[in-house]
Length: 212
Image (cartoon, rainbow, N blue to C red; front, side, top):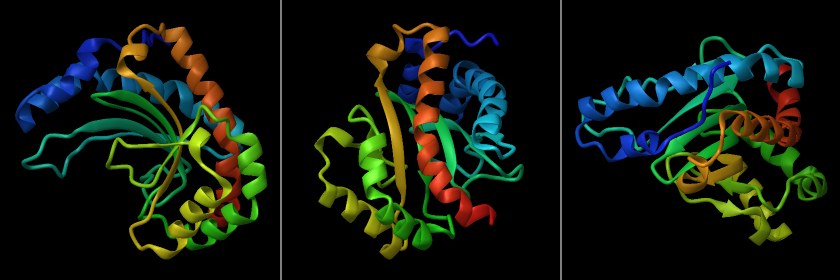
């Protein structure tokens, strides 16, 4: 494993003008690192969750005009794709790195998973640290800090997943670009590993709805 962490050049990719120009910069600076992280964490996650996990590096192939504002590698128990599955992600915006567990709008289990989350609210509040964050839209960088969310806020977020067609739910960590560039590759691998172990609770709650 040769992952050496992130540099300012990685975050500067998202300031490059033009679709082709930004994609070239992304392929040069970020995609090799996402490939490294994919190769490293796919077997780690497979062992952790008990399902064979495959990694998928975002290709942004459907874009024809607007350059991507973020990029990622996703991990799911499906070789073909991840968007319909509960999955894990590691990725970057210009402002930060994210480490997510995600159920996004394409996932057919959203209704049942909403009920499962509500039924396990106490487990979630006890096991998800205050340093973690939530998101209800993977296409936007804004997050909801766990430290600021009441039980009522979480219930509303979980209920929304089951009632709003385009609803999503993501939970994990975000690390500012400033902090990210100061971390070594070893520190990153340890942080991501720790984050995934914490997020395993949410995967396990979704797992029976997907694989049963």
